[in-house]
Amino acid sequence: MLFTLKTLLLSSAILTQDDMALQAKVNTLLSQNRVQTLHDEKRDKAAKLVSQSSYASVIEHNEDLGLELLQEACNLEYGRACWYYAYETLEEADISHAQAVLQKSCFSPVADKYNGESCTYLGIMVSNNKADIVESEQELYNRACNLGDGWGCYRLAKDFVIDEDIEKAKEIEEKALSILLQDCSKSEAASCYFAGSMYAERGSEDDIVKAHEFYKKGCNLGDGVSCYELQMNKHE
Image (cartoon, rainbow, N blue to C red; front, top):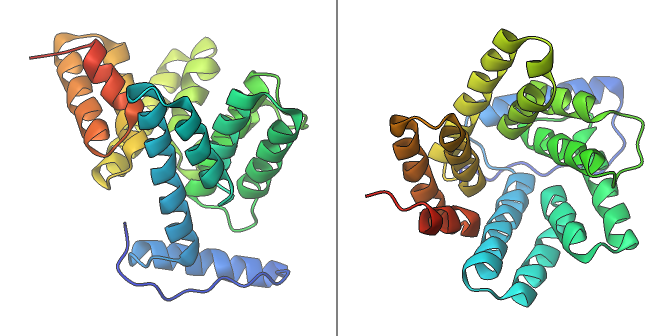
């Protein structure tokens, strides 16, 4: 989706500190030069399955299909999908699996922004009292934001920083929106939805128009929640 070449095979060997540092540099270089890795392809497929799941559940009212699609995405070790699936089933085994997948990704020694998304959803699990880990919700959102996850930055600002420093919270919110807008421009449906939600929350007439635009883009990319917001908040 975001890159043009498909050249990197990731080794499953245990990395030394030097190896990890080198791999981190390689990942950064690949990202800067728009190289698609096998890991990226797997994640992109899983993210699309999550969008399809939301469309099946929210728009088509086919909850069984929605769950099947989430499970398929979770089987690709996509943490967000595993958490959504566990949230629906409330089965202890599914909750434990979601935590394990998210932890492994969040604390990867070569973490990038997509690992940051895992930190965000691990934080959300903590906020729902569904994760048994030592890290706090705030620590997880902070790590997510530092790794470049827009929704993690938003949760950090709105759930924690705003109580301590309003100006700092506004600064982090702007960072969150900037990341989400950039990701939406790369056809990441969930980011379009989150960007729309941030504009909708601001509430001015201009912001409501922008929210509609991003919900529409998210819906066109197949995101069911974006389509639902369009139906509920029609703007001519």
